Image (cartoon, rainbow, N blue to C red; front, side, top):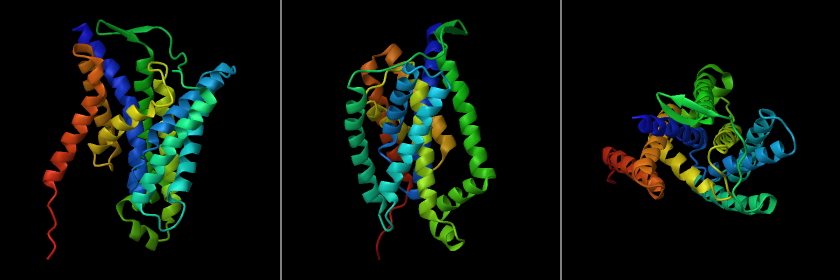
Length: 284
């Protein structure tokens, strides 16, 4: 029983990271209709930059904030390149984000090399219902909850959040009332970069990061986001937590080699179910 509790809590911590990546995907897609395949790169850049700041002597908190800010800046840069030109289609922007994600590989290897990197998180071991696990997992959960609550407040209570939600609901109507849709799209990319960066700086102490770690992050993040049709952050949170727990249970009772397959099977299942529920339009 203690093993099961340990796997579940660990999975929730890992899943929270997936959920943060997914929330960034959702924030961008809702406003721009672009699936940002560079989302995982924001997490890797933020994590590696945080490690550099810690090595330079900056304290925890300040270093992690620097990593999140770098993620936001990277998101804004990707947004400018992907959607900055008027008339760029979502399909073209998607390909641009994919290319920028690959370009990030070269930048990361050039600056930090190709060896796995990590840095210390919350020290010690926590005991939950008889299970012993790294205390840092509890920090991940403690941060993720308020972040999603803050996102809900931001979209529902602030003028900027309402403008972003208006673009997500009806881009044409938002333009009619004077909202700059392209500017909202850039803000969404910046927000997505910050959320991806936060995922990176939170999870790196318990999972080493390399230049190609973004592949697993984007696969799992996309799988979690697909549960909500790429439009609902709260459902993405539930999807990320479910995915994290499922993968940890599979690794604990089966084998770690099947973890990515869990994400792919879940994503394909949801997409098949959703497509079956969508009526097919027949041209007259």
